[in-house]
Image 1 (cartoon, rainbow, N blue to C red):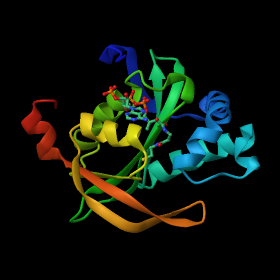
Image 2 (spheres, protein in one colour; image 1 turned 120 degrees about the horizontal axis):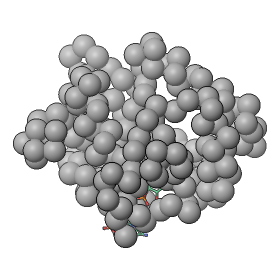
Image 3 (cartoon, rainbow, N blue to C red; image 1 turned 90 degrees about the vertical axis):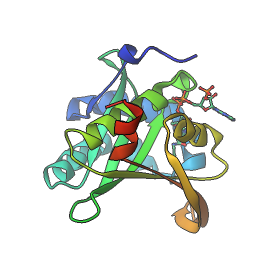
Length: 185
Ligand SMILES: CC(C)(COP(=O)(O)OP(=O)(O)OC[C@H]1O[C@@H](n2cnc3c(N)ncnc32)[C@H](O)[C@@H]1OP(=O)(O)O)[C@@H](O)C(=O)NCCC(=O)NCCS
């Protein structure tokens, strides 16, 4: 089931979102850790969630990242989408990463959040390129990339060390021209 676009919003995460983020991450921990680095138990505390959000805001002020909550309506936190390793100069690129809580998966939240984030990244934020790296055995994320029009650039062997193993990743990218030619912007 895909939700109508107006039902899904993104906004910068704030320290007061830490409680909702903690509940979401605790409930989804086992599934998230299949595809993302496992976190120590300490990560699943309010203090660390608050710290994580505060760090993201500081990184944003330094021009390095943007961390958005994905919301059902304006208030119910269902996931996170982040632009990290923002590089300006000749590259104007950022890495895109996302997750959606297990209770909310399969309803179009990630797909819509990627589209909203790309519009912001290529609009207000002024980037030219977004890239994402997805493990080949993560069908939901591969499908999100396909549905949002990201180009599959190829397989990067032993690209990231996830939970002790250097894992292959499929690299995807989109540039500002893709959104403009798509008429989405
Ligand atoms: C990947 C993830 C963000 C997708 O979030 P989501 O909100 O469920 O995504 P959407 O609902 O927008 O789209 C998911 C698509 O994948 C499909 N899908 C889900 N599981 C699938 C599977 N096992 N095989 C094939 N397709 C699958 C869904 O059917 C849907 O496609 P459709 O609209 O054509 O039916 C979510 O599963 C997640 O958080 N996973 C754990 C963390 C993670 O993997 N993050 C990404 C790291 S690169």
